[in-house]
Image 1 (cartoon, rainbow, N blue to C red):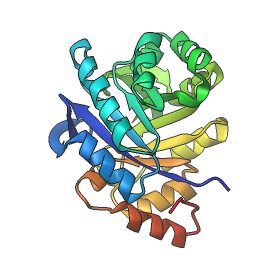
Image 2: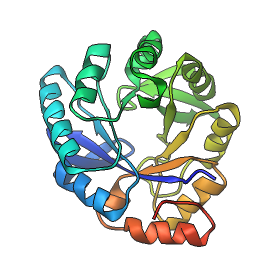
Image 3: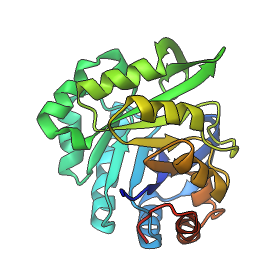
Image 4: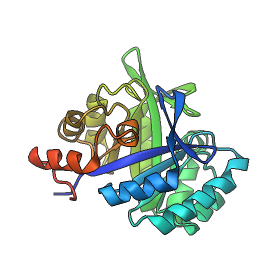
Length: 251
């Protein structure tokens, strides 16, 4: 049985870790390299860094941060935010990232998924999907959730899998930052139609939410931010509880 993964997510703005609710109202959560090292020491399985205001100017900062993180941690980490070319991915991987996450750029030019999978292998291509339930239908949103589209979450997830994505990072915008639990029905449906791992994101508020997303949502990994950044759920305690619910995790 494959072990389930716990993944802290660090949203990066101007070189600092920040956290908001429903994608807004950001507050400072600390130095990303220090936090990364702390999480690796506490038993996180992987890390995700998302440059939420990625611009060309910020790119050099991100590359420098990736290099420092790679020097400090011994667990895999993914970097996302503003990635739209093979060259940018090449630079991130050379600086020590294990995977990259693409989102809006994949929707705008779906061939990018094929190009990255062909060049670097599916194992390092994560397609992040921010979606919102609108009138009962899950619709993909772009640019940090600010631009709605008519694209269906499930159709898009299937397409990127066929194009070579190795993993899906699904964030429910309805649940993000609310601490009311993950979007388990949508996650379970994704898990039915896909053959690649799915990372649940958006809504973690307590240990039971993690139990539920692994059991009901059939998620392969669960990603969270504020509950980890502000010490509400220590990762060793979370993993102990998951074990007690017969959920396989790496201790």
